[in-house]
Image 1 (spheres, helix red, strand yellow):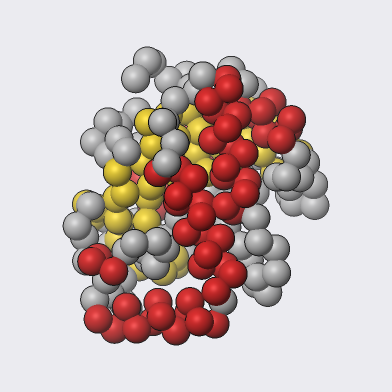
Image 2: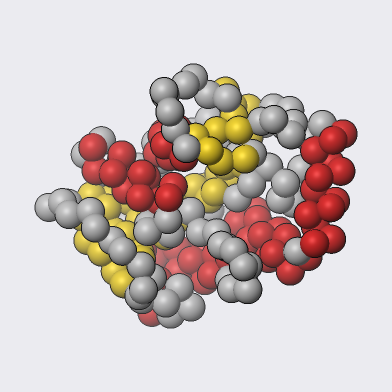
Length: 214
């Protein structure tokens, strides 16, 4: 990968996305952040450009990506889970990256998403089955998001955390492709953001899915 100077962040108004923006700026990157029209993007910095608009707007997505060296996706549905958009939006982001020549992609999904059974304990597998039955459209959407990434020719990394919690005291997190996830597994929002930002320049998990937890 060439030297990365500018990072585009989708989902920048979310809990993880905000921290990704802050940490990226602290590490000296220029950041192009996408926020929804009705969201609060309160961070101000000379190296930060904010793009507000709907994630379904392909021209806007392309504008956010144009001139960047890396894209980080932290999109996710929120209760009551009626807004299903991750798969389609990620597909558009991938298309725009291919058109603009941006290769590095770091995409946040989740430990329950996609073909994850080998990484889950038996109780967690049962939890996944229950949640999939309860919200099939959400799980189908997130699986489609992973498919859009995996089937792309990009230098992608999927980051798959378990339950997200508020950070108290910062902790040491562990990560690997084979990490086992259980019902008690968790990671803080801030620590997860730190791991995502580490992947901007890391080559350890190119075209791989990595699980991360405490």
